Length: 365
Image 1 (cartoon, rainbow, N blue to C red):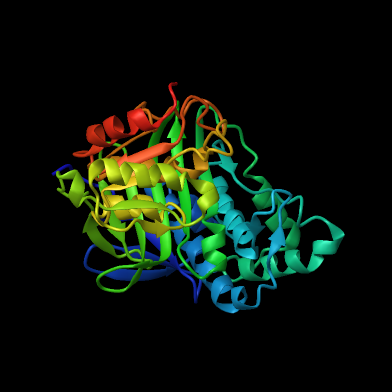
Image 2 (image 1 turned 30 degrees about the vertical axis):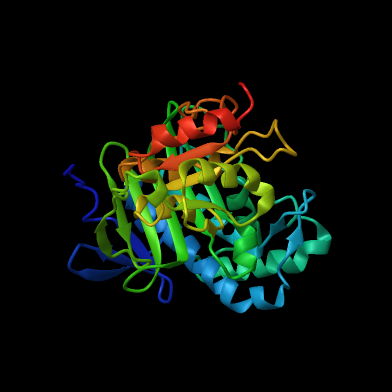
């Protein structure tokens, strides 16, 4: 087994008392947290885990207190929902990364333009109040500035952030994820996926952390290590379980059905929002995740923040990820995977079979 020297000292933050969880495999110790403490967190693993933990806590507080009434929902120009949690999570993650790595770029999904509009003053106040539960001294201008730290360019060394992947799932009180990855010179080095409501054998919620060439590990939301994760050993296509998006606009359901028929898969598709589907493959709970081009938008190219963390988690768990034509995902093309079409993630053992089955179902490219 590959060594994971970082796994025994990854750190997180207690949301109730704004304290640090110093986590080992067997014990947890508390220390107070402040700006100097965040700056002392020098490893990418420590900072990344602490950042997604803080964001997960904020998201769950928003989900539990506001989502039922729908009061925090805003509509983007593309009509996809944005929530107080989206903005708050980006503020917290960007604040932590900027404090620890001031020279790094951050490429986030959101910006503060909506919150700066006078008609959204109440929304800004709500975001600020939730952020203050993690950052008690934060003012509204701090929150806006932290959100806009996500305007970095995807060049050199940069972090990729989706503060809530699966916003519609979040609003349905279903699956969503906080997705964070570190990219250096076109290579993903770290991936963090926090899935606060994903079921686990022992409890609810999981954080998966992957380091390039060092494996993938599962943690509780409090930062306690559960152990390494591995893809399944399924080798017969008919025994495979396929995961796909809940939202039909995010995939080609017809192609998924054709693939299942071609492979003789009898299981019903596992439909989940967000990069939680990557977690399902990494944990051996599904063997195939297909995100195929929607025929209504054939020229669409995937955003890097929708896949970067999940790509590394599945890869380090022993799986394979490519586009639907079998080509490796190219992370050096800016904010989108311009050289790729769709995404296929598998347990590795079935990958070539899946790509071969897809080939006659896809237009030549």
